[in-house]
Length: 247
Image 1 (cartoon, helix red, strand yellow):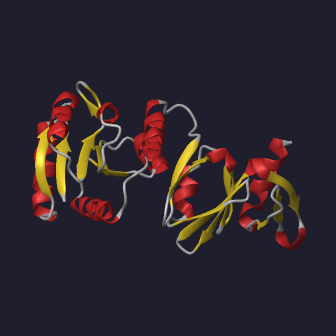
Image 2 (cartoon, rainbow, N blue to C red):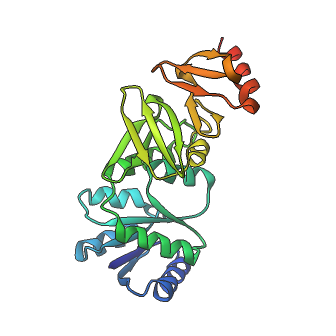
């Protein structure tokens, strides 16, 4: 695979170049740039398989570069500092990212994923842009990568998520279900600021869809799609308090 590295810090470029040559020897670096303008010139000359892209640069952002080339056919790995809100944005958009300073094992894993995956969705990048640009707002959309497609979903349309081993099954208000190969804990953390509550080891629910609390056998929630979800004993009081607040 061929790659272009873009970062406005020469030291960061040096480190990434060295790490790629040491740990990913099958990656051929065909160019480097330190600004949006120089990167745009470079991408007019080369069409690499892989783009390592910094987000904040002196003359703009990595998003500005991607908007110059809306039909660019390549895989993007973002490289960024470890701001918490940025990490959450990457996860919501389901795009690959590396944190500075780059861990060699993370680099190898990201490159391997890039080799295996198809092109990302433009809408996934839209989710990333809006989440990073408006960090004070609750996220409204999420990108879900299944085995055969990329689904962009409104978070408010998710009724519940259910663990299936180390995977998660999503249930939507229109009756659709989506199977994603990430853990329920991953989505519990991701939706921590939205209207979701982990009520059981295997169940994360959007509490806007609670219809009733059933007291039999320790406790169950009846949801508006007629699903019945068990409530763990240790979660029962938290659920009762929530329902009382919701009135």
